[in-house]
Length: 453
Image (cartoon, rainbow, N blue to C red; front, side, top):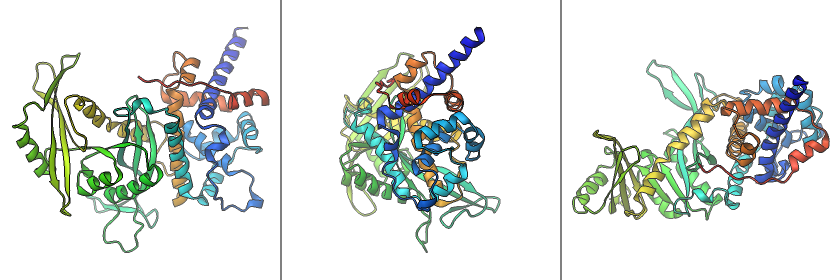
């Protein structure tokens, strides 16, 4: 009897985690098939297709969300499970879960732009539904962190578009980075809004592609896809320059750009000089732990860029001092906001959220089980499709983990994020559901509130 109760409890928990997974997708994005409805191009021979493109994309997403770590594990941990394959049959009418190589083959014939559209469209849906509105800066601007990260690295040339780096030992490194625009929030969300792959696509170019070139391309695409979205870009000091200022002015975007004391000497000197004449531009905030934050700012700083274009900027900084100690931290930003004593702390707090693209964004995707730097495909196009599926999986996982559907089902939690993924995998592999039960889990009506802490 005790073993029977334990078995029933395990089945109940498995049903709950599948309900959280499928219910989160249903609540925010509608029917499962609707997520990928804009993906049209499929170069496979139509008469020989066994698996619809939606089943390939869902399986790839499931591979990431369950942290399988490789295409091979689709076969070892999903394809051989009768109950997992039964779920796939209910969803897509297929007899089996597609093989990892089938995903790779199918993705080679897809359009990268269409998958980018899926990712951007999912975030646009959250914005349109006002899911993220509570985390806007001044209840208006969405915080968009811009930064690049490495994705693939090889000791031999991977493709004609590899970037190259000469190492100290004389060998050459071939690598593929990507520039990301991620919508971030104070409670920890980091959603990929748009990606720009950094690669040597220009034949005969004298210089390699780089973050700055990629940013100009990304900015053009961002404005075209989100023409009316109020944005505040959070960027590091690499982007502190006239071309970036001009892009933001032209697109009516706000920005907070990290400014080091050693960068843009003219701006730093003018800032320090003007501060001596504006003693009122200073504010101190005592924290509960006894630390002290001192804010300083100056508006109306003039900057002439290399193209002789004039820009009017603001500079704000936050100097932190631990109780009884000297200065322990300093943060400074360039901005195109009018800084005041009433908004300086909010602006500084927002500027410091840029680190979330490194932590909640890149670090978790690299070291949290998603294996961002693993070569899921050697093919240029298929590799990018896998990259976008990772972004989709991580978006859904974040919504799951911070949603009330999960917290109501598991009030004590399930431990680490990897443990949540393990529970979902085991439920997908082992939980037997009849058609009615599975349909109810997938198509039920749910109300979800997000954790704001």
